[in-house]
Image: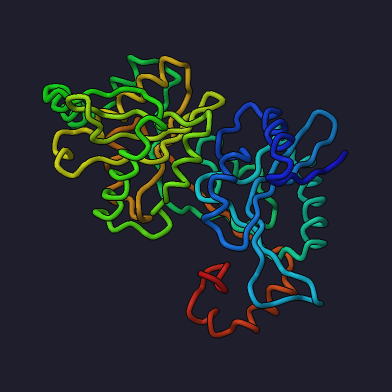
Length: 344
């Protein structure tokens, strides 16, 4: 048996290790974690791995230093999943193997002064089954998913009639979806995206800069489906596609064209494209809130085949240090009941 940890300096090995798992998607890769590295202050992406015989385990996360405090003159860290749906993944559900993997992980974590973990599990592979025995699992919200495993005709039949009406409306008004290179329309789409985020009063986290879009252009997993009117880009969606799964990453549309069902059109056309490529699932994500009636979730549900439950996991790894931090930041703890209460 052996364990290894990878970071962005060894991302080729990290990516190669991902290939041992049949059901991994883009969220688990070093490229995805590199993409979000700049979004998390004082953080570094890691992948901790363990194997015994023909069984393999991988756990991808952000390792983040706790600000303004040390333990015995050493830095303190916590672990959290990057934005999206990640967590641990294993080639087996064997309890003995998983227990051994987590036991080794805990030894490594305590040597690194890691005090806790916060996990965003992946609803497609339902990887909460690989959790640590001490993890507290909580239902967070529903997400929308399209299942393509039964073929194009079944997928089409599962799209709601009002969504089909909006798609027909878009086509009738001469809107057309094209799969094109994001790099060819980067600036146009970037401006549309900025306007969309401003219109929706999005959080600062989602105001991606042009550097971020440059990075998206360089990823081979990035697919862009733009909607055009008279050969001019008026909206579209960015997706990540790999290993028989697709992820809906960003979508935007000019305000004046929303009423024509433009967003319905590119989601539908992209879905048909993925289905024909034998992609099994499209993860459209959830809403802006945990409310099941969230308007964004409702839109995504109307353009998908089903809702799935998204779970989060919480665990204190080193209670002694965590209790010390609770006392050190007692004022923040009173104001904020989150597990990671000591930073924004």
